[in-house]
Length: 404
Image 1 (cartoon, rainbow, N blue to C red):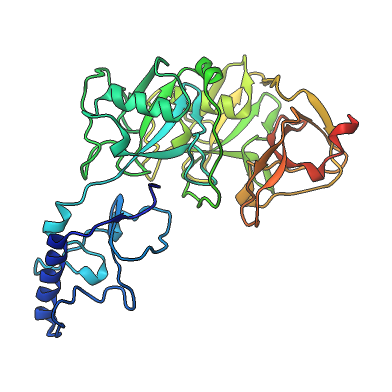
Image 2 (cartoon, helix red, strand yellow):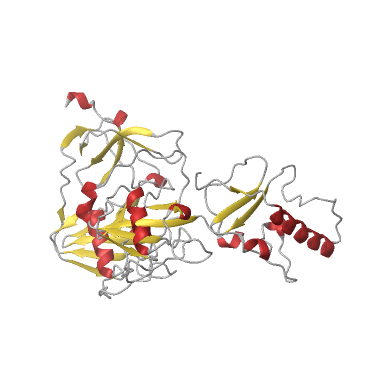
């Protein structure tokens, strides 16, 4: 069963609980209730949908369409001042709450250089976050068994060396593989997409990873949280590969949850190096572009409201002694651009801005990419421009590959 499907409950004890809660509510409000009626929470429908922070539970004789995103905690458990749960507004009676357990374990994949795309993404604009059903993980849910399951569904061999963090905010990985994790209760690791578990593998093990068997269509958008930065060499500012503002090519940003734990300055530096394709140069980072306060190697509170680089107008500064672009050996084939195209802000930096007459380099490996705001996915290639920026380009915007 798909993780976004509701769990159908046909249990008379639950019905009785709901009847009792509704009777108590009607007693307080003075409303009459027909014998045997549960509630008219859904007018004209036989279903009653109950929302908790990480699970949707429904009693229904017919299926209904639900939003793919999980309910936020503020939409979940609500209790009135008199101690009676407001069923009409989505609240759960206390006895029923005890019968509900979460179904999903959220996770992110990393190498030491930063985030790695999941084979099972759940958002179109954040391919790094995913989830699995808790019931698919072998009991008794030790750290080793959780790692084995995540490795399997992400295309890695069981013997792949890896470390597991219970939370992105944890500064140390789980050292004892026999540690049991509470993955089926209303607390514990991987409870929400904002606080997933993190699996970190070595960079070299990516080569042995099995490819994805295909991605689902019509994925929703994720709510991303960014760290903003500007990158410099001795001659001045450099165009960023992660630029998103078409009026400012020098301002870059990265999703904070794409930075591998622990969130030290060294981890941020490693991810920016990878995102910008720079190597063999000394980097110094400053809290802002005035250069007054260098960022020494410490833990950064990337999930707080205020951290260095949390605001677009106050990015951190990344200063390089020299900049050497990392040449991607996959993108070896030159190809000419025949159509100028500027992707919308929502599609940057996944899509590459191109100008007619430019020469790009690509591997000519056909792939499909969704365009936010478009009707269907588009066919094209991953390509790199002369500035070292990499992104997707539709094949119809390029000269014929057969002519090269």
